[in-house]
View 1 (tube, one colour):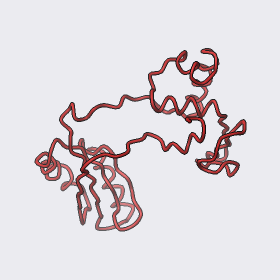
View 2 (tube, rainbow, N blue to C red):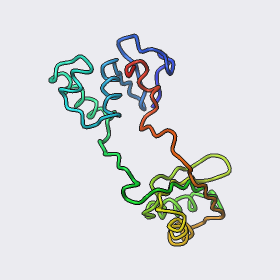
View 3 (cartoon, rainbow, N blue to C red):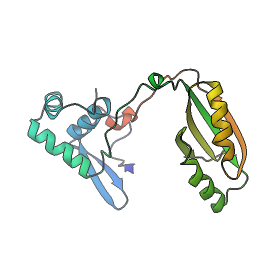
Amino acid sequence: MQISARFAPGAPVSGAEMSFHAGNKTLALDRKDLAILAELTTNARASHTELANKIGLSSTAMARRQKALEDDGYIQAYQATLDLAQFGLTTTVLVRIALESQSDDALKAFEAEVVKCPSVVRCFLMSGTDDYILIVLARDIQDFERIHRTELSRLPRVARVQSSFALREIVNRAVPTVVFGEAKR
């Protein structure tokens, strides 16, 4: 999805609409839609009444807009953010993986198996020297050793695995704030 050139990233959303291009279809969001999305990214449980009061709409108009944002695919799902430390998952590991080949077969074989690894919470196909970056959650370094032995080392076509341990999380946003322009301020 591309943002139309009518608005520069981070520029105030002073006009009535911001256009987005998705495939061959142009979708438009106005300042109130952006404000709704901004509020929902920080509190997805907010009621229509709470959102309506913050954004300056009636509850009925708010509900109608939120439903339209869902129907148009801007809102794909609602989820809870869990305190993973409560579950003993205190160690985040970034795992860089290089495959022995970048053939279609190698990529497909790796991807089919990595989705089965229960400790992998994110996996990205990359450009550059690493083929994939995985985000792995573990209880501690001993638990990561078990994950490495029982999950990661069994992945097909892997030539190299390099792991880095996150010391502390600084930023964790669901959406970059530039998406909302001035709507959130």
